[in-house]
Image (tube, rainbow, N blue to C red; front, side, top):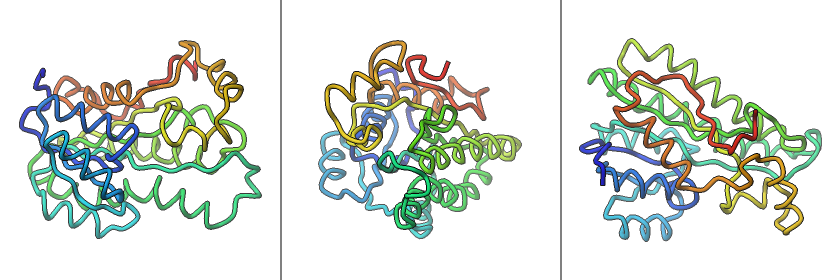
Length: 244
């Protein structure tokens, strides 16, 4: 344990699985007091018990979720907006409204909610960090995923805009742009999960592998730590060179 986050309180949305679980584990290892916030009660509580941290039932689509978290944990130093959803590859005009709304509700609204709920307290203390898990899709869009791409592009732009706005208050805002990882969302991005589809996708990544929760967690830990005290407004690509 390097204690890079010693004494800091961190809330991680979508922390029960995938990238979020990797971030939760890394943050605990680095000394943070972690709250895993997720709709998956069984998975979230099980992971929290194994890591010795807290779990909170959290529907990120609702502002009340974030205001309740801010009331319960007013000393929160770090908010990681990790919860996200995708949609199957499909022509943009064929995506039904329910799918489009779900992408907005889970990928776009939560950061707005987090800012509403946590920025006042951070401003009063003169410190705070937001880390948003965006995607290479926001800078190098793939055909057939247009509304997902757009949601991540929105998150990147919001990250940069809020970084400038909140810097005078001592609040840093950064993002991580992973390439697709071997997580439950992978089949959604690829439109299935076969050796052929994996090989085709991997051929677009120069380092020749998918991202892992550990890769994303290491980047998020750096951005959340005091080592990145002069870093704000970046969207750090963790993509094996895909977007070059």
